[in-house]
Image (tube, rainbow, N blue to C red; front, side, top):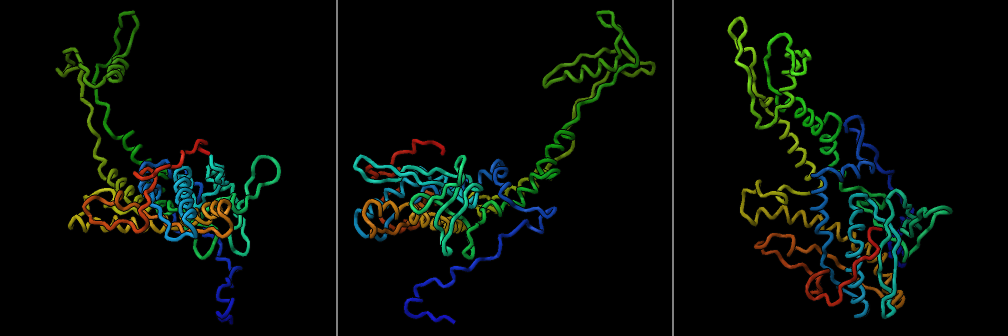
Length: 394
């Protein structure tokens, strides 16, 4: 048994521990299938999934930065400038880790007019193309195939890799989309809700109407013999909204009209099918961690302040995600930037917080975010905001 004394108190003794392999398909899912990375692009095309992704991502893309501690004033300044530049030029690529489980890429640096090394952009890699490199249980770099030849290994200061949803020290994560997979699949699978809705409206939305016609044939203006049945079909096919119809007043041997027309009718009620879809859409948003009251206040029955409790809980969950993102940015981008500019001993603590003043409704008397008064990107007081990424969508 190892007792924590002396130097062993500060030494990681379980660096070789590896958790069990990543989970496979959900055994309770229809057909034994389950959420996989291949589902991510398809889920992003669903309107309600896309809405939920925007709602979750928005607070993460506009944090308030502060530096509680730095080794020097220059370190504090450079930390804030670097963090803001990273979020402005690569924030969306980094936040995508919560959906793809991994955001990886090459950090590109540049020198400004004063010769200071600054963050330029992040050249992102597809999650399945990046292989994480570890040493002693710690992340060391990223390997990626770049064209022909041997794969390129990027080490500290050149690689960025954030794994979302890590558990038990594993270097694989879990997507936030996983919780929405069941209702999404129930909605979009063959013969699922969306397919059934489309089929119902294709077959039962309304009848085409009914036209009775005489038995037999007639001769048209070109002297061609035509059947009354074919004529009736053409009339019905050419009927459009607002069209008028003139029919002869001829009678058959029983005194009944030879030509009659019965208008189209709505074919039943798809209300239950539509309600089924709304329930699945609500479950999708809940699966993404979004409370109902974030979307609508319909379910609110208590005081206004009480109805903000789910929203506050939602923001608290996002803050945990933001903490992980900010820690990775600090370790892999901010600290290397500090040390290449200010020396090996330069360091700073970076804090990123959800901007509650923006994302909580006014009148909730929410406390201001803790931290320094330094404004986030785009707020008054940014004397020299970082330039946008000229490289586009790398």
